Image (cartoon, rainbow, N blue to C red; front, side):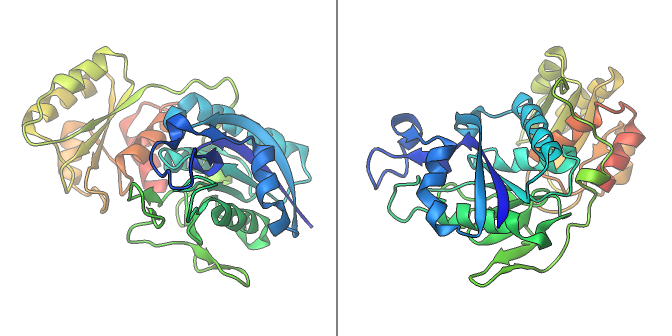
Length: 329
């Protein structure tokens, strides 16, 4: 029998709505089950695994941020060091699930399967996906084939790499997708079936070392729009940002006025990463980047570029070294 730890952080997957058709107001009006309560709801459907509850948080994922990522990394490191586990499942709200997943994908030092799972509908709602997603995540974490693939995200019977996946719908059950790359595999009725491995460096192959006392630098994201000026970029620098991610226009630029403010930021020692708001495609404008001292985000979304930049800044502030991290991860 596989032994799988279940870490509870809250989110829709642990929520009980006030009535069975409440798909909207439950974050404010409903309640959240403890991780033990959630296990009790689905334990009869997972006779193949011993489930070990681990309490962590019980909040919506809009309340989860960098300090929680660090604490979660330390919690998982402790579980891994204690031994006796075949996998770990993290219950998480979907709003920031992809950011938590990518941080762990970069920061954890383990080959143990770690699966982040959420739900689009509360546990007691009509048509809920919570139970099915959780069972799929447990099956994935318990599968020997999941080892060494980095942090995984499981929803809607699909297994995604935490690097590639993003939420693309506010309410639909098929909200999580991996863009042009697609899922790593599927949770099928007969087995967990993989089609590919992640290509970029993760977990044991990254240079990042996160401990319980790690303090991550401030990194802000600036969203480009027609007529953007440099006010927000200058405000970010004034607020103490060590890095800025420009969620710019395709194929990787921002407005002239904001560009000028970002060049000023670079001159003051702030790391500036150029990403794009469009959601797909690599940043390839090398001359534009090098002339302005910017770092290209490769194909990372702005929110994931922020995660990588935060970790990168714990190692270096040198532009070329940071650019190499974006090429590798």
